[in-house]
Amino acid sequence: MKIKTKLILSFSILFLLIVVLSGLAIRQVNYLARDTRNILTANYQSLDYSRAMYKLMDDIDTQPDAIQLFQDKMRGQGNNITEVGEKELTQNLQQDFKVLIDNRKDTLAIKKVRADLNSIMKLNMDAIKRKSSVAEKTADRSEIWIGLSAAVCFILGFTMLLNLPDAIAGPVKKLTESIRQIAVKNYSHRVYLKGNDEFATLAKTFNSMAQKLEEYTASDLSNLMTEKKRVELLISTMEDPVIGLDENHNVLFANDGALAITGLKKEALLNKNIQEVALFNDLVHTLSKDLIIDRDYTAETLKIYADKKESYFEKVLVPINITPTGETELKRLGTFIILRNITAFKELDFAKTNFIATVSHEFKTPIASMKMGLQLLSNERTGVLNTEQQSLVEGIREDADRLLRTTGELLQISEVETGNARINAQACDVEEIINEAIDSNKIAALSNNISIDFKISDGFPDIVADKEKTVWVLSNLISNAIRYSYENSVIEIHVSTKKNGVEIRVKDSGAGIPEAYLSRIFDKYFRVPGTQKEGTGLGLAISKEFMEAQGGNINVMSTLGEGSVFTLSFISA
Image (cartoon, rainbow, N blue to C red):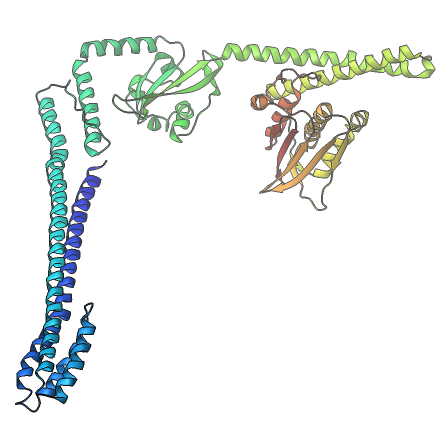
């Protein structure tokens, strides 16, 4: 509980106690006033009337207005009846007084009137005694209630008086003593305070400070220097260029490889802000651009002239993050810029690509000859084939088509990898592209009893694309949809406009792609494990390269059991 909350709660309790005690006292005083008021307003009034009439009995014969005054007092008494039996006594008084007026010398009537007055006075006197007793009991109860309330308030207030100052002064005293211990360099001293208030937070911060001071004091400067030299030696002997930066992007170190590849001397690089160095060195500018814009980074390949030839390096940024002692959040201390020489791997990749391109190109001529021979065999003028021979020819034709498609894909991917793929982007009609792609897959769709649903509104905007390659990409998506859809299903092709662009969506009704493989579906040679359908794993990789080369994009969404949706995004013409 926070200190402020404790103080507010304590004073609120004290205020509540004062209100309760005051309310109880006012309540009991009201009870006493009510009982006293009953005595004064009722019984004492009757006694006053009775005494006045008693005195007037002696003046009835001598004063002419005594009878009138008596009757006025008697009438007042009749209107002030409050006790049981008082009404009957008052009526008796009225009757006896009437008899007395008729015969003023009647001593018996005089005695009866006096007796009636005595009875009324006695009745009210007894009531006064009884009500006085009630008032005394009310006063006693008031004393008890007020006394008990005062005792409870005293106990609570005294408890708070004892505990509240200690709750505040105690932690302050402990922290003060701990500061004295730190002042005498006793850095192992710690403060332990329970709770979640400000003092507990202050104690945790104090302990963190003391721990850092203890670690700092216990560290050996010579050991630190030795470790620093060891690290510097290790970095300097690395073949890969390495540049180390602090949290402000100042250059802390650069090994010989980094100095050689940048063409800079140590004095021009060390202890300088890398952004300043980047102003007059293009390579340093390329290496530091991701630091300047401060964004999430993925490794990229750079072509740099090194070792007297064009070389390839993979740039990697390695952030140096630590959790300081006594803290919980990571803190950036600096960054390593590492250039990994991948020239040998690139040369092997180029050799592989050239080999595939050469072999694929050489395969095309004999495959074309095979297809021509199959066409001649299928022609009845060269002879009639029996059913078994026709089946063999059809099988060879399917294998030749598959082999031709594979070599075509290998040639396409080789062109992309070597940068020889030519993109002729211009304004194209969307409907025309889609219809051409559908026409090239009609026979395959009919053989699987699959229909292709496509509609487009008139006046649809053109797109910026290479028509030939876009038809190839869309045809590949439709072919895949036919291959992976169930029989008697429908492939849907939707076209829609987006902000400054057009989207073409191809939706199949196949088994779908597991979510774990969606991120790899466009990788070269990748096929979803367990797939029984034929394929090389190149079609989607080529499609992605073609789409990005013409400023577009391709992505996929899929749900198991519901099929997949491939989306092509283009820029409007």
